[in-house]
Length: 182
Image 1 (cartoon, rainbow, N blue to C red):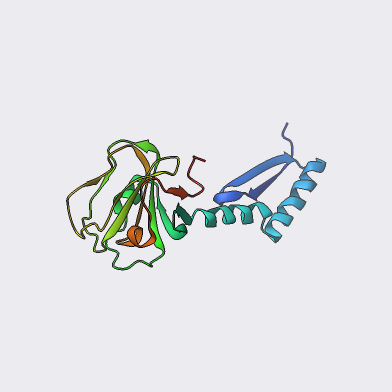
Image 2 (cartoon, rainbow, N blue to C red; image 1 turned 90 degrees about the horizontal axis):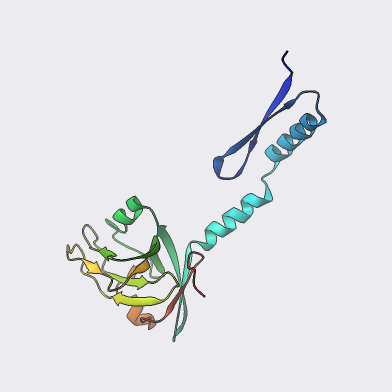
C-alpha cells in the first residue's frame, strides 16, 4: 500500500536546498506549500544577515599608536588562493590588501614574490591578532623566501611603504572577524 505524498523543495542558504516529503492529506503539506510560496516570493532575512557578515570579512583594521587603519581586503584561505596570492597584479588601491589565513598559528610560513610585480609590505600576524614582524618593501619577482620568525596564522599584504607611512609596527593589533584574540 502506498501513500500519496506532496514533495517540496525549499531553497536554503548558500545554494543548499531542503526537500520535504509529507503525506498529501496532512495539514503540514498545506503549510509547507505556503512556506515554499512565501520563500520564493521574498528572500529570507537570514540571507541578508549572511551577506552583512560577508561584508565585514572584507575589512581589516590595524590599531597602532597612530590610530586605526582600515584596509579593504581579499581573503586567501585555501591552498590554491594562498599559492596565487597577488601574483600578476600590477596595481592595488592604497587602502587595499590581501589577508592570508592559515586557520591556526603555523610554523614555517614563508612567501616569495615570483610573478608579483607589486612591491609589498608583508605583515605577519598571530592568531590573536598581534603583529609579530613586518617584511617591508619586498622585491618584485624575487624568488628569495620571506619567512616568519615565529608561528603565525595570518599574513596581510599591503602596498610597499604602507606600514612605515601609517606607523604600523610589531605589537600592533589586527581586528577582523577571523581573529580569535581579545
